[in-house]
Length: 161
Image (cartoon, rainbow, N blue to C red; front, side, top):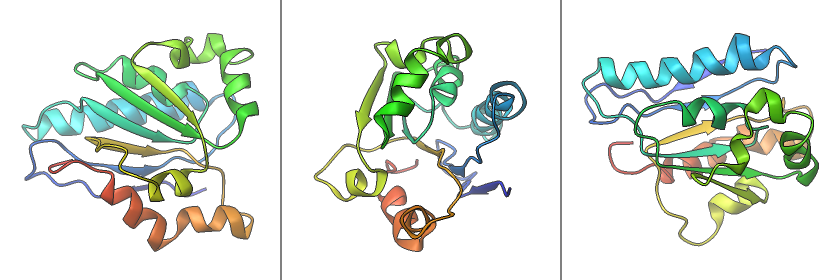
């Protein structure tokens, strides 16, 4: 699996990041998600930037949301997940691992295809975007790793995001 961290801009007031997070199984929360989210927050502060206030999470099981909720200044998280079964799993079986993050009032869960949602009508802009998607092992998933997809993701970033 490859980790891709793109789009850090130290000269902007808020460090921006488009992050592709590989699926790593049960150990993901401790060994990958938590350190990654903390690193993004620390990078922004080290560069003299502000913390992200609004974060878009594309895909995922609530683990990234859990870590984002621990970051100072995060007021709003929008989580877009295609599969209702993933949301159900996150709210039941994985609830102890993700700390019930998807039930937090700062987290708004949308069940939709990430690309379709990003193409949709104005959805606001975000200080940071976390992309937590499965490996691109089918043509449908492959489009979520395309130039078009990341152009849509970039468009969702606020100025300076």
